[in-house]
Length: 110
Image 1 (tube, rainbow, N blue to C red):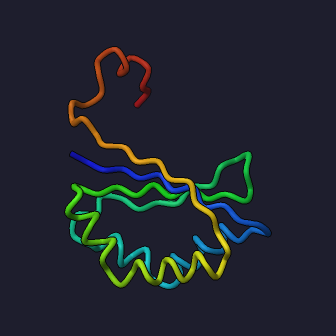
Image 2: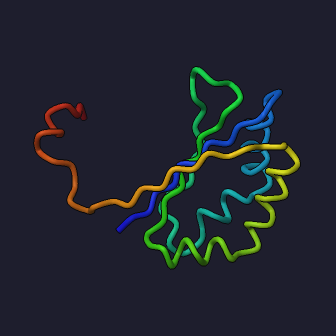
């Protein structure tokens, strides 16, 4: 089972991008990626919304995610969210681990 969380950070005056940049430059992102159970932690920028940043955060299981939420990094992240006055929209997905169906594979170009 993989837990994937999409977090949309939104703000004003480019603050969402500044937040992501500081998360990276401060080393917080590398520290999170090094946590046991982290599968991925990547920022993306929607083409049609310059005030939003999408974080795709993936964990191997709920225990790993709970450990991350209890870590000192969460306080640092909350501090930066407050600094940049960001609001969040969150989506959570749990993989079914069955892989991509053959009917969908026909549409994937490698």
